[in-house]
Amino acid sequence: MNSESRSSQKIKIVTCQDADEASERVARKVISLIRERNEASRPTVLGLATGSTPILLYKKLIQAHREEGLSFKNVITFNLDEYLGLDKSHPKSYWHFMHSQLFNHIDIDPENIHIPDGNVPEDSVSEYCKDYEACIETAGGLDIQIVGIGRTGHIGFNEPGSTVDSITRMVTLDPLTRKDAAHSFGGEAAVPTHAITMGVSTILKSRSIYLLAWGAAKAEIVAKTLKVDPTDMLPASFLQQHEATTFFVDHAAASALN
Ligand code: GLP
Image (cartoon, protein in one colour):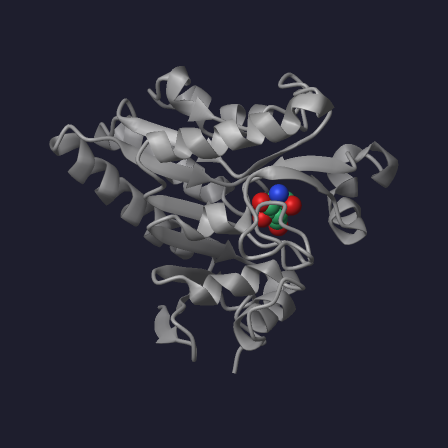
């Protein structure tokens, strides 16, 4: 059972029974676009996210590859973000996460995988970020961007203070974000202080955006995101200005919505 509604803004909200049903719905959208593009011998450009939220979605994409013969050979991916100072091989790097949760299990061409490099020297970060933006443009722009949401209202690592016109850049992580990541790093002190993230404007350029949120811990921030006037104090609220954004939420994450 799920229900669909539109908030006072343009965002479509799909409330699902649970994370499994929501992930299945998102997976079907991604799979049908990839199929359509494969048939037309055209690439599909996906913006991908990390965190616990999209894990089920990635499982379902792997399943479609294994059981339905879905090929990712024509898929180009760009990840939202990466911790600065973490090597690819670090077990908590997003590079490692994406490879273990998805890329190692599908037939994607490694050359089509783009994840910000957490090891880029500080004096070349800004040039590196400009190149990342240019690379997305050269690929034809993002068809679908998957995003989760942090309790600060961040998308990617666009923490409060991130403006609507922000592009890929180096950012300082919010204390709440570092606290939320502490359990997986074995303590807050081990959580990196900086990251590279696509900007709000990079995300808003995607043709479709799917925000995924499950569990009661996300209820308050999801409701606020939809309620406030778009503000850089809650960067996810800028999604209200996008023409084709859908929030896929479970009942718990939807529980603070009117
Ligand atoms: C990190 C990531 C975000 C993600 C957020 C939520 O901060 N940079 O992209 O949306 O975590 O994580 P989770 O899905 O585990 O709640």
